[in-house]
Length: 115
Length: 119
Picture 1: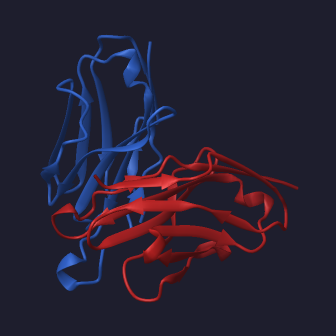
Picture 2: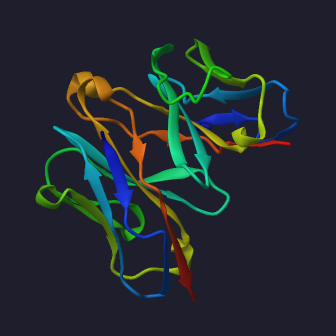
Picture 3: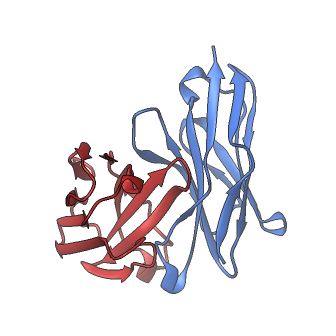
């Protein structure tokens, strides 16, 4: 079955620390991968997405993610976090073909950044 | 564009009552999705539509749940009768269809959600 898993439930960092949130997927065939963010009290917003091409994807607000097919991973990174990055982060995947659009979300990782 | 619009934003009801959640997708989008978010189960896809036609409803938890999309600009998710375990945030999302153009899946744009509490 298709699945997406996130390693950490809650990550706590100080401002300027580097961030890496883990995401692993289990899909057969072509996979499309996404990172969404949900700021407190707000709806989900797309940070970045990968479906082909360069495995290093750059998104908004200084975030990037690397698709490593051999490791079935799509980890999210940011070199220096800010207090405003405090939010919940979701990795999600979808398969092409008849499963188009059907996103499967990971459990989410809550990021708390202390000033 | 105003984005995906959902109403109501908050709903408190008693067990056994009918609940109707509403969604207006972004104009011109081809796909509409209904998700449910709970602490225990995270974000789950309930059902999605393509050009107003339900494509996959395998995530709908039980027969008490039903969804319709009578036209391209409106969808409803109905729970009848509601139960306390239905308490959750329900999100609607919409997206364009770029599959035929081989550009890959387009971003799903989420609405603000409806926080449902069933007492």
